[in-house]
Amino acid sequence: MTLLAEIHAGHDPTIYRIPCLELSSGRWANLIRACPGWDDITVTHEDGQQAVYPGEGLDVALPNRNDSGQQRLVFAMGGVNAVAEELIEQSIEAGEIIYLTLRMYASNNLGAPAQRPKVMIVDTPEMLPDGTLQVPCTYRDILSRRFLQGRFTANKYPGVALF
Image (spheres, rainbow, N blue to C red):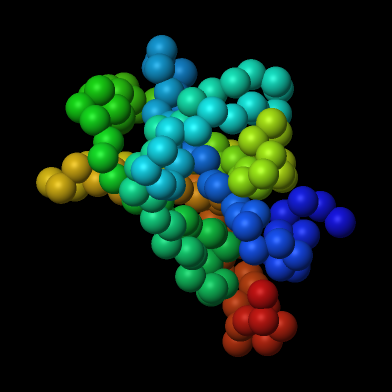
């Protein structure tokens, strides 16, 4: 049983999940990192490198369950500074791909991610007037192509609606 499976099973209420987000692009010297909460945390990545994630407001909007062939997650990061906003604007203007890496840690073990990191491609990040960075990204449709759309529909294949 994996560490996250044990947490979900509810064996100890004092242990909880900590999602850590990291935005990166080819031109950036610095990465944009965030974790939920008030305190900054230091974690160890899967390659043994240590990183500091500042505590910020963090929210996730889960994708719709439909037959579009694409899962779109929307992350909202509060308290993003002007440096991060400038990095994102430079990448958008240059047409570069921005990657979002989601690492899940258990609160009792920050020495390694509790599961394999998920890397997603950011669609169109948007800086809101209140200082919140809204980051929509895709996980399944990595190439932004909908080659399955129209083939597997709930009308043709009723079992698709269950997934």
